[in-house]
Amino acid sequence: MAYMPSLRFSGGIALCAALCVGCGVTSPASDGQPDDEITMASEPTMLTYVDPADVEGLAPQTISGDSRQPHLHLNYPTLPFTKALNERLHRDMAKAAADYTAHTTTDRFPAPEYNVDWQLSAVASDVVGVRLRTGEFGGVRWANSTQTLWYDRTAGRVFESAQLVNNLNLLSALVKQHLDRDPAVDADVVHPDPLLFDSLNFNSRGDLVVEFDDYQVAPGSMGRIAAAIPRKDADALLTSFGRRARHAVERAIPATVPQIVPMSSSERSSSGAQRLGSANNRPGRVDCTVANCVALTFDDGPGPYTGRVLDALRHERATFFTVGANAAARPDLLDRMRDEGHEVANHTWSHRDLTTMAANRVFDQLSRTQSLIKDATGQTPTLARAPYGATDPNVTEVAKELGLCLVQWNVDPMDWQSDNPSAIVSATLSKTRRNSIVLLHDTNPATADALPAIVAGLAARGFTLVTVPELYAPAGMTPGQTYDAGGRASVSRRGQPLP
View 1 (spheres, rainbow, N blue to C red):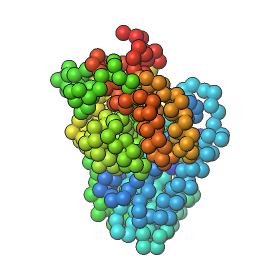
View 2: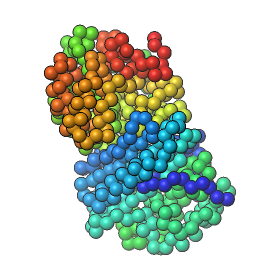
View 3: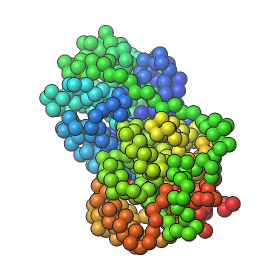
View 4: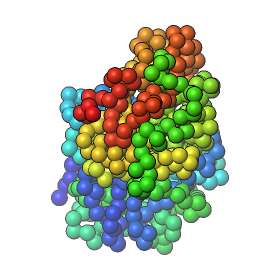
């Protein structure tokens, strides 16, 4: 049998493994959308990852697309000691984004989507491993793929996964033996092609783990397909650098995955006006029924420019909708947001369109980010912004369950696509009115450059900058409702009935 190959760019996405069999073939996710490596502890293809917060100087980078079609969001890491790897990742991600937008039909609903996030397989004195995870949504279900790149810090050289082994023919034969144990997998399509073996990694015991993309060796509905070659068999396969990579993984201290837990009944009952903006509802702050209030909001961070954004805000306050995968790398910036009086809010874990997912996947995306932000700041978020502003009743119901209000916007200066600070300033100031919610991105260096002039310009026009909860005080906000502007337009008509 043969399967339709998945569209390939530079990147990959890990698939959820719910219940596994001995060969490392996992059971399917219902919609092709993964959780992050949820596997049984005894499963030999389970991988562990380094906590990015422990890597000094790590900066998540983002390439994003329009909130309209097609949807595009690529995250990748840069480290201060991996120059060649940084250049390779930037080049690959930029090409993938350009290729996707150039060859994707946009007049479809739901919108097509291309999404990349990452994990660190190892960060040692001599070896770094980066596992890229790509998901493509074509209108029905997600197609997922993985790629793992390895970096030799001593030589300053990037290695493809296939370069960890010295004999692809022998590797192919061993993998076939493992995959043949599952009749639903077509082991005959495995052959010694480096592109087929572009995601090689190691488990905590030193076994060699081979991951396959959707549709490469089995129907995409089967979920993650992987095989673990026992350490003793892998020994003869590994190059000298492959052994160093394995040793780096074995030395790594695994990251702790944020727990995915619902709100307690007491937390849920305290949701609403009393809880929303608990960090910011200080007596005598601002009365937006009197003042000309504006809420600046920042999406997709934290990233390398978030510190400059915070510097520009100084004594002002804003709302930051943080992506969980980025926040995991920079919890220090979440601490700073909290300490400086900003609202830290939820922008999902990996920035995928929530309307393309089943309810349990929506819950995972929001709840995991809730847990991480609470761990970092001590405060449970009460606001969420859906990626691309895409919501439906399914998303709304999950948000309500988690005590989250959904926040849209009504001013979009399109800063994400501009490298001209003056243009961003002009677009923001010309569109902003009283009670506006302004959409900006702290992942764009031009936005950081523009922000001092935006803050000064809004002040000169008599506007007071507030957090989103302050914009709706004293009436408060209701979990499960969608908001896109203050004042009379406080509750959105985007799929939500007015109360």
